[in-house]
Length: 464
Figure (tube, rainbow, N blue to C red):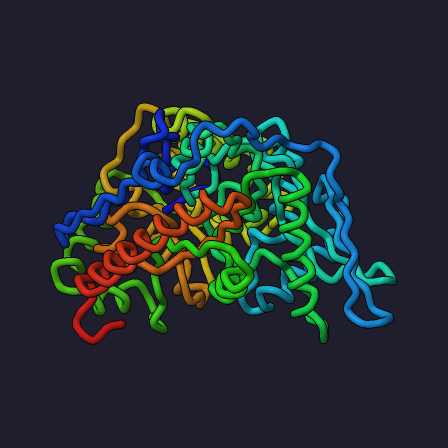
């Protein structure tokens, strides 16, 4: 389960140490299929005559930040950049987000509350390499027509779409890859629209205006690239048609097939998988652990303080650098109320572990997991992150549990691979062509792995 900023649920790739680095994707051992795509600078760029270029890209600190587009003789769209989400009224930002994703598919990560919590808690700010450059589109009477979460980034951490090798390749030829523009939700590999459009009669034209403004902004800043990560598939297709390079990835999601309870779900599993899950769940009570699911006002300050300790234990042991501050979790609980589901494990009166989830319109999003330092409870990670999430989704009548990227162990617990998307706009044509070739080869391998995993899934024959 991929995490909001460093957790056992995510895999934050370490940047490669040389320009001859490569991407490695590790398919699961059950199908005994392995592939390794090497993105080697010499192979891709060595014969292209790029040489050591003298004119490296440099960031312009005073670029044009406002753009005007004519829709008709009387209607115009003004696109501008704001340096904080606080510059946009929460109600208007959320109206764009709801219209873009649909009321029944509300995505809590696109909400003003979530994004402002990241900024106000100093988690996604200039000092951490995430300078907000959000896009706002208005009509001639200042009605907001669209917004875009956008950041000027000085690194590639917290994105879950790995481009460190691209940065190394740029560097080896005297080009600067950073800073770059990134449209995403920081530390959050959750699919959703990125260009958040109000439902107007001319929203398609507004979309085109924003894409043009984003490209112009990238050029005016003299940046290497613009990236849109985890957009919706529809948005991904549109951006591909507008010159962005398409990329695909893979995550693991659980699907609710109108289950009445957890045992109903287990009956769709193959016998061996069903037996394994039941044995794992029995270990929780055998260790005298009590699982609780807390929402809204049930989550107190002490819970957040404990969870921050768990989160830091994970980041300290696995990644080294925590992206999220203690204040973020308190802000999240305060601002998002019942959209937050915190699964906790108690041993007696003591909290020993927790898993953070957010509740959307039809989806439960699992994000972070952590446990008490120096503690180990067999199968507790599976219980807190996967089985409790499934029970909650059934109880709340949600269609999906998104467990994020990485971790083939999720498959035998009912989470199957799905395709994720990203788009990449690179200014330099020769680098663009080389990276396009890499992405095409990478995509064919990702598609093959997804098919192999789906064909060897944990469910009975005929269950899709």
